[in-house]
Structure formats: C-alpha cells, structure tokens
Length: 67
Image 1 (cartoon, rainbow, N blue to C red):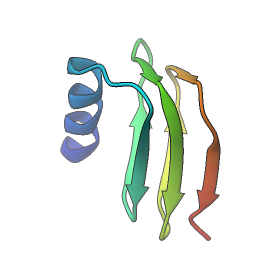
Image 2: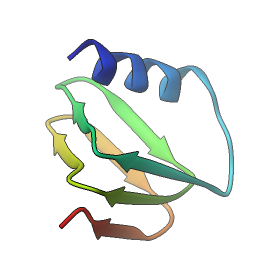
Image 3: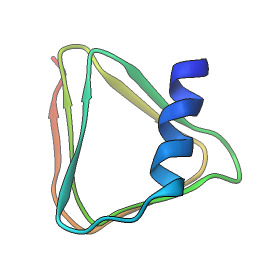
Image 4: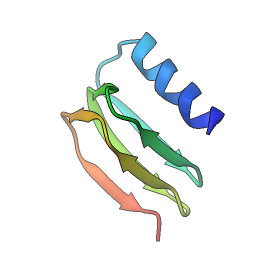
C-alpha cells in the first residue's frame, strides 16, 4: 500500500507531457479524492492491476498487457 501511495504522490507532484505511465507487476490504486492526469498513455504489464475510486484523466492510449 505504501508503494501505491508513493506512486500517486509522485504523479501529483510533477507535470509532464507526452509520457507513458507503465505499471509492471505492481498494483496501482487511486483512492477517493485523488485526481491523476496522464498527458500520454498508460500501459499495464506482467500481472499489474489498476483500481480506481478517484478521478483519472487520460489523453493517450490505455494498453492492458497484464495477462
């Protein structure tokens, strides 16, 4: 859980454009009240999962290769 919160904090603390957010074999959880904007795509791979109870804004592609 701490890893997930650290990832969300890092995403909220920085702004980049044209990037790819990759989750590789880790769970990603957005809890209620968390807003994340990805100015690019999201790729899930190797048994990664994404749980969203917050708000996700995505401008690129969503690719799920997590199996």
